[in-house]
Image 1 (cartoon, helix red, strand yellow):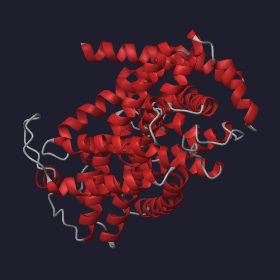
Image 2 (cartoon, rainbow, N blue to C red):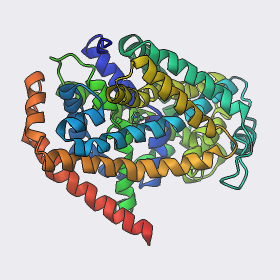
Image 3 (cartoon, rainbow, N blue to C red):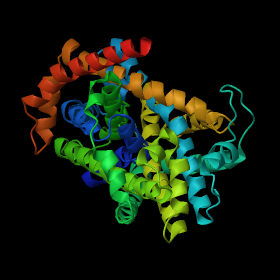
Length: 454
Ligand code: PHE
C-alpha cells in the first residue's frame, strides 16, 4: 500500500484550505448573487448562514476527515454502511461542479489573453456570447465544438493533472503557496484602483444599501446559504478529504476560523472592487448602476471588459490582472474539487493514487469538454442552479441529521476537536449543528421549494 499523503505543515493545510475556499465563488459569483438578493441586506442572511451553519459544519468536516482519515463516504461508512451513499452524494456534487468550474476558469484564461489587446471590441456582450461562446437560441442543440473555449480548458486540465499527480504536498500545497499570495496582492491592487475611480462610491452604495423587503423572500435565504456553502467549500466532501491529510496532532478549530475569515474577507474585498468598478462604468455611461449590474452570470465576461475598455490608463494591465486573478483563485479551488473523488475512489476500490487520478481527471475532462460546445453556457447555468440551490443544502441537511440525531456523534466529534486544538469549541457548536442549522435549513428549503413550485 502506498504511504498516506500528508501536508508539509499546518500552514500548508491552511493555505490549501483557503486556496480551496477562495475561488470563482468569491470574485465571480458573490457580487452578482448579493446584488440579486437585496444588496446590503444580503449580508444578514449571509452572516446568519456563516455563523450558525457554515462554520460549525466546517469544523465538523475537519473533525470527520481528521478522525476517520479518509474521504466523505469513508467516514460516513465508519458510522454505518447504510449512510455511505450520503458521502458519495457529496463526492458526486464536487465532481459535477469541477466539470463546469474548469470551463469558467478556461474562459477567464482566454480573457486574460484577450485583455492584452482589448480584443473584445466595443460590443463586449455580443463578443462573449456570439464570437467567443458561439451561442444560439436553442438550449439543446450542440452546434459543434468551440476551439477557442476548448483549448484553454484542455490546457488547464493538463496542468491540473500534473499538479494532482505531484501529490498533496508537492502538488496541491505548493500550488497554493505560490498562487495565493500572488492572488491577494493582485486583488489588493485591483481594489485600490477600483475604489479610486471616478464614481466608485455610487457602485458601493448599491452593494451596501439594503433592500429589506427582499429579506422576506425564501429565495434570498437559499441563495445566501448556497453562496456561503459554495464559497467555503463545505458540503462537497472537500474539507473532509483535506483534513484527512493532516498530522494526527494538529489544531483543527483555529485553522477552521482562519479559513472562514480569510474567505469572507477576500469575498468582501472582491465585491468592493467589482462594485467600485461598476459605479465607475455607470458614471461614464451616465446610467444608474443597476443598469450595468443587471447581467448576473455575464458580469465578469461582458461588463468587466466594458469597464476595462473605458479605464483611464493601463487598461491591458488591469484587465490581465483581473482575469488572471480569476484563473489563480479558480485553480486552487478546482484541484480541491477533484481531490474528494480521487480519495473516495482510492478508499473504495483500493486503487493507487495514480490510477484514481487517471480515471477521475480523464472522465471529468470528457464531461468538461461538453460545455465547450456551442451552447455550453445554457447547460452550465441550469446545472449550477440545481447543484448549488438544492443539492448542496439538502446533502448537508441530511448529513447533520444523520450525524447529530441518528448516530449522536456530535459529542465525540467535539471531544476529538478539543483533544487536538488550542481553541476549544464549546456547547454552542453542538447547539448550532443539532438544532439551529437543521431547523433553518429545513425551513428555507421547504419554503423555497414551495415557492418555486407555485
Ligand atoms: N469555494 C470555491 C469558490 O468559492 C468553490 C468550491 C466549492 C471549491 C466546493 C471546493 C469545493 O469558488
